Image 1 (cartoon, rainbow, N blue to C red):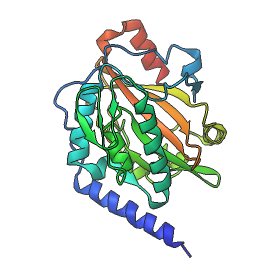
Image 2 (tube, rainbow, N blue to C red):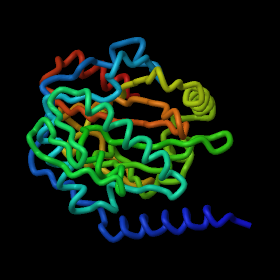
Image 3 (cartoon, rainbow, N blue to C red):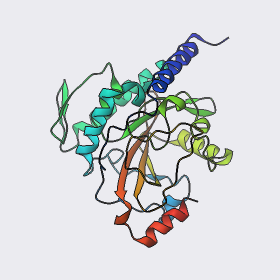
Image 4 (cartoon, rainbow, N blue to C red):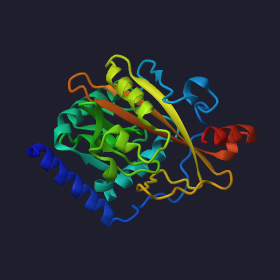
Length: 289
């Protein structure tokens, strides 16, 4: 017999999926490109980051960061969270303690980060906007404070499941479809994510220590500049026919010591493909195949 907790979780997932389906393809709420000045590195050219999973240790406090696109990215996040919270946010009941721990952890990071002003009731961001602190909605609050999308992964036997997230800038996936699913299910239908790679990733997640976050970086090419770019399983993503935008995700992994959940944080970086040389762009396209 299913447990009461599992039944509640299933009902919540169904409700979130129903809310998402009513929106159709959700509104990206962005009418112009929001671009960084440059890529911090070319991960397809670096041996350490090109080979999957391409994990590297984080140095110091760099598991979150603020870059030159902070202001416009945060303005877009504000619009998405206000207009379609059921699309960009979800949290299973059993994940609430992990969300609360993440809330405290990110606020501790903010307290030491130049440009933020933290008070008991609000945070003033580097762009000058003041955000009320709402511990009753931990992920939604954090989604209005940092550029990164924040996903919670929690161990369930031999897998790590996605149990909660604030996901404003999905790169061709949808939170409603992936919530409650293990890593192998989240990466369907990605062909390269086979059983061997899945086992390596599970061992990596299990070995993460709270004192040593990790990072990796992926890379895509897109015709669209939209940061909010969801796609349902089975929909074919049209590949760019010309040079348009290069989209990279700097992904960080942090173990939360109390709940033992793993934070999967996604910092999205988009640049005009014209900023990189034709040779580099050709190497990028080759690395994607």
